Image (cartoon, rainbow, N blue to C red; front, side, top):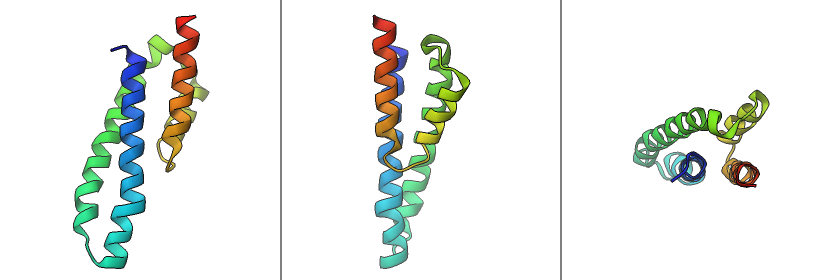
Length: 99
């Protein structure tokens, strides 16, 4: 697996856990009085975010990310469904490198 393939997987995992946290766990906590959902999904998302950040930093030399691109990718990680935008950017860079 290449660094960019690992980065794509980390991005999708991080994005999935963020959506589950924001759209499932938090409403369960506040509307259904079930805080366990956030207590479980919070750390899972935290680990996924740290993994994503590590993978992004590790892929920077290989992909040649510019500082603005790194900021854009990190910004996409904190917005629900931002992982889809990040995935497109990563796929585009992988295609540029392969060409």
